[in-house]
Structure formats: C-alpha cells, structure tokens
Image (cartoon, rainbow over all chains, first blue to last red; front, side):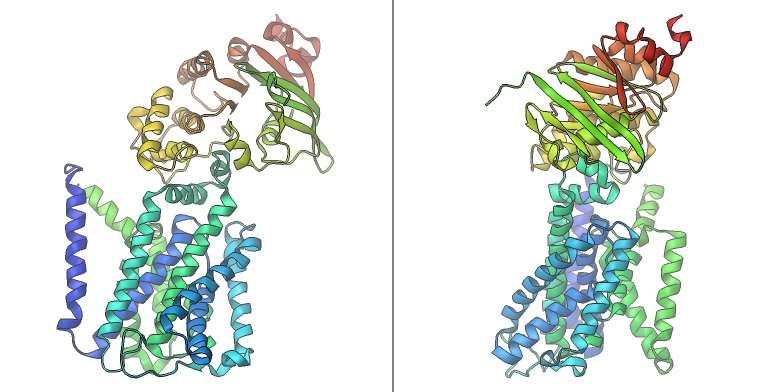
Length: 325
Length: 244
C-alpha cells in the first residue's frame, strides 16, 4: 500500500487536470457535434449525480425522476412564454416547483420500502406524463417552443451561433452537482443518508428522523434535476411530454448512475462518459433500425454490470486499486 | 414538576399481534444506575417489550415513562434523542461503512461536526475494545465484534438508558467473558441498563434485579437469588436442573 497521505494529492491533481481538459475541450473541438456529445454527457452526469444523492446515498431507488426534470423544463419555459420571465429566474422557480412536487410525492411514497418505493415512483411518473399530455395551457401533447430571444446572451440563456456557452453552463451545473454531493457526503447528512440506506431501524434507533432525511435528500435531488431540465429546455428550445417526462428518461438517469457506480462521487460522471457516447454511436450506426438497438445495448450492459460487478465501474476500479496497491 | 425517582417506568403495557398477546399488562421500573435483567423462554415477549419501550412498536395499552415523562407515542428516533439507546437481537451493522463510521452515526446525535463525531466514536470504540478495527469494514467483523460495534454505536449517542438485546447470543464461548466484563464495566461506570439474556449464569451474575416473563406476562420481579428460586420461573423457564 502506498502511504495514505499521498492519495489526496494524487486525487486532487487528477481532478484538477480533468477540469483543465474539460475547460479546454471546446477550444480544440470547434465542431457542433463533439460539443453536443460532451454537453449531453455533462447533463446526464449531473442528472445521475442528483439521482445518486437520493438513490445511491440514501438508498431510495426512484424511477420517476423525469417528473423533476420535466418540472424544471416546463416551469422555465412557461414562465418565459407567458410572463416573459428570464430563464434564469425560471430555472430557480423550476427548482422550487420540483422541490414542492417532490415533497408531495415523498410524503406518501416514502412509507413504502425497497421495490415498492421504486414501483410507486414509476406510477407517479406515468401519471404526471399523462397529465401533461392533456394539459392544453402547457402545450398538451404538441409541446412548447421556447420563445426565441435575440441577441445571444447569457441573460437570455440562448446561444444560436455556437454551443460553446452552453458547454460551459452545462459544465457549471455539473460542478454544482458535484460540489453539493461532496458537501453532503462528508457532512452529518451524508452519514445519516448512508445509515438509512443500510438499515432504517438501526438508523432510527440512533436518533435519525428517517422520514425527514429522506424528504431532504429527495428535495435536494429534485432541485438539481430541475436545473438540468431548465437547461435542457433552453438548449434544445423545444419540449414536449415525450421528451422531458418519459419513464425512459427516468430509467436512463438511473442507468448512468448504476453503470458508473451508485453511492460514489465519480460514478455518475464515469457512467455518463460511457453511456452517452455509446448511445450516440449506436444512433449513428444503427439509426435506421429505430431506438431499440441502443436500448438493447443498454440492457445488455446493465445485465453485465449487475452480474459481474453490482457496485458499478467505480467498484471495479476500487477493487483494481486494492489489488495493485 | 414532579421529581421522577425512577428512570424508566413501564405501566401496564399490552401488545397484541392479532390473536397473540405478546405483552400483557406489563409493569416494571428501572432506577438510576440499575442493571435489570430480563429473562424468559422464547416467545415470552422480551424483544416486543424492548420494541414498545423504544417506540419500534406502538403499545395497544399502557404507558412508558422516561424520568416521569411519557414517551409512549413517540417515534424511535425521538425516544433515542431523549436518551434511550438499544441494540438489536438480530444485529444491524451498517455493513457498507467502516467500523468508526458506524459509530459516528451514533455520535452525530450530539454534534454536527464530523471531526468531533469521529473523536467521540473512537472513544466509544476504545471503551468496547474495538479501536484497532476502526477502519475495517463492518461486514468483516465476527459476531462478537459486531455486538461490540452495536454497543459502541449505542454508547456514542450518550444514552441515559441502554437496552441490550442478547449480549452473548450467537457469540462463541471464548468471547463471552469479555463481553460480560464489558457490560459489568459499563454498569460500574454508572450506566443504567436493561439486558435481555438467555445465558443464566451471565444474567444472574450481572443483574441487580431480574424481571422474568412468560407468555407475555411478568411472572417474577426481584433480586436474582429470589427470582432464580421462584417456582413459577423454575417451571416456565429454568427447569429443575438449575435449582439442583
């Protein structure tokens, strides 16, 4: 084993180098497509990190996170469309709406444990999706165009000339998600969430208000997810229930985190860095066959991970480090 | 405000599971600094009684008073924060966390500062003789070590009353004396304890008072020597061999 004191140095140097590379990326890759792929990686890494807070640390597997994503996307878009409100304000309001929704959902659903909780979140996701399809004021099934603003500016959160600014905003959101997760991880809340994941009765016997902490984890997770949703709306400039509320999105968020390794800080980023380009690649090469092929590959990957290494790629890396260390 | 002379006062608690009466009108008290042993055959209602006192099960009838205040309707975490800690018969370590992290979860009840929680956790581990395993994962511990871990975790909450469910259950013979010494030492330091235990020589040796349960009812309550000779206890649980 190398001296323990060296690890933080190695880790921080590694993280610093990675950050510099990510900052330099759009300066080297000026074409839209590579930038788009990395923006999508950032977005999904961020969403998976938000999901990870609730599912990975607190052990509450949600398969309905699209609800919060959609809440963010719809809130900022509707506020922009009907009240001409800045998307930045819309983003914050979207997060607040998502938190409110999460607490409403959480109150009854957190009484359920394990698989029953996961099933209930799928049901909630489907209900919200159906409601949105039928809500005409919010665009119904036709969806909504985000009002186009000129000129390109940070204040408008719209950039029609280049993806570079979107890139840095997505990176900023990802860093925010990482920072919050890290803060939670090393604080009392992080210990409490993990204790709840491991054994709720033991956690309660040590004085942890289990329901309250689940609600807090859910609120934090929902708020971050909603930020991602608002960003998505401003980036794609069109949303409909099918793109921001589908169960497939909830599952993809979950897959990214599971593949990378849930309950770890770096898992979501690693998962997104593998799954998103893979999705792009399969879309390009098997595009004509519809989306079934990438889903087949996702499915095969998840089966592979759960059979070989249920802890995800992070666990594999840790095992490798122990062996060589 | 009435001054409570008793730390714990259990008044006529009853718990039914369908047709089965797990606890029937049970009353007993625990004084400050006292070590009360609870004995009884399997199914006598010992663990149910712990669940009622710590809020894991609601009592159908009766009251639980802690220092004169009712805790009957409180949640387990609320009762814990009022100073009642417990261990479980079926051990519940946080297996994905290290030993010291397990105990920190308990220590966080009194502080939000991780460094302080860690220091207090180390002290608790030291008290139970598990300090050398602090950085090990909880899942690699033996049963005896897990019992110590749960004890340290409970101690880290700085409880006023400690409920131990089966100190020596499932532990190999060689490890029993050290665990018993540990409980005796905690009591010697002034802790108030209720201990469920099947090993008669252990419980008779450490308890100041014994409460014997059978079929959900208290059949004897008194000093070990008296309870050990009580004909009803002998018949229900100990068997004639123990007396002879």
